[in-house]
Length: 138
Image 1 (cartoon, rainbow, N blue to C red):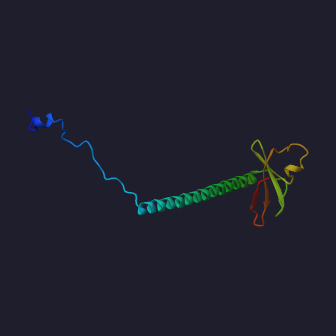
Image 2: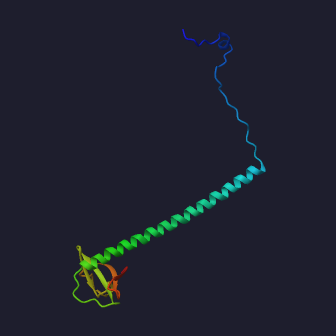
Image 3: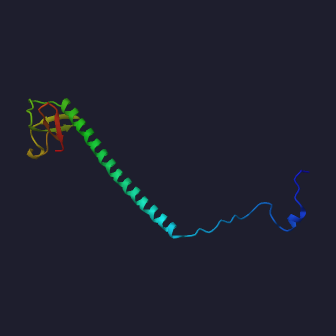
């Protein structure tokens, strides 16, 4: 037999050896509690507004990063394109691509009588004075 023995009278009364309920005092709602709740609501509103502002900034930064990547891709295609003329500084040109073959021309997409023989127009570009390319959407 074990050293732990439960007195018989405890079981006869149908009592348990451990508590089955824990009571806590009721929360009192006071003017101070209401002020704290209102302050918490204002703090949450401020935090939500700040989070929304930061999300908008993050979207803007992502769009700017995507634009920079696109412009870098266009500049790379200009370097690998076949150019049959010497580009003049501050003159508008158009970059077309057909089956992975980029072509730089002086003819805008609006000037073709039908579809462009060079494929889709990727960008409108302009060579700057330092011989870099300013890239814009067509």
